[in-house]
Length: 225
Ligand code: BV8
Image (cartoon, rainbow, N blue to C red; front, side, top):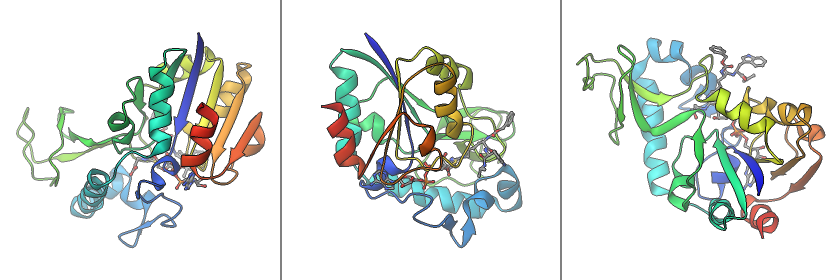
């Protein structure tokens, strides 16, 4: 049974109507993503950061999985391959399409985290920093999302899967943000074949063994079927 590790980024959710980072030129609320998606940004202005994530949580709830999400769920369900989806996305479209074996390496809009005691709980639709933590009661509530300068989740598991994979596929990501942008090099050094499926060539496109460029709802089902 072939083991396929699939990295996805904002581009796989673009045709579901969720903005990518590049499409918005990284400008959200007139602030660069690096400013609002950092612990320093949250410490400086938690209300601005919550406004940014509350808007994205609402946009994700209003979106639906597209043919690319569904094709990956079908690939996993047909049982011919072991599929692991590692997503940089914080929306829940992979889950809603039926993907089971899934790692949200940058966290999720669905999660709340106490910046005081580290307790995690399901996020309310609209979150405020003053929401008391169910565990310690402190008003230090933040989204359970990995910001710039923070360690992504389950990295050892992801690197182990990459080393043991029979194929690494990267879908809908610009290849700008590490460590995700380094996965193609990790796969290559482990002798794992690599494929890029993206609207246009990513920053790391030269490192891939093969690439198909076009909208995810076309190139992903085209590759899966
Ligand atoms: C860490 C959650 C260390 C937040 C995100 C200098 C050099 C190297 C690295 C660094 C450096 N300076 C700083 C760093 C580290 C930094 C980094 O890489 N910075 C970059 C800017 C240089 N990385 C980090 O800080 C990471 N942590 O390194 O920790 C550490 C070690 C030990 C202990 C402690 C710490 C953490 C990074 C995570 C940040 N959080 N997301 C949120 O979502 O709000 S990042 C966010 O942007 C996304 O999650 C994603 O990862 C990233 C880029 O987004 P993409 O998904 O690629 O989207 P983008 O818009 O860029 O591209 C869309 C693509 O889709 C395009 O290619 C487009 O062509 C394509 N597309 C569009 N439409 C379609 C399509 N494709 C198909 N079909 C379509 N229809």
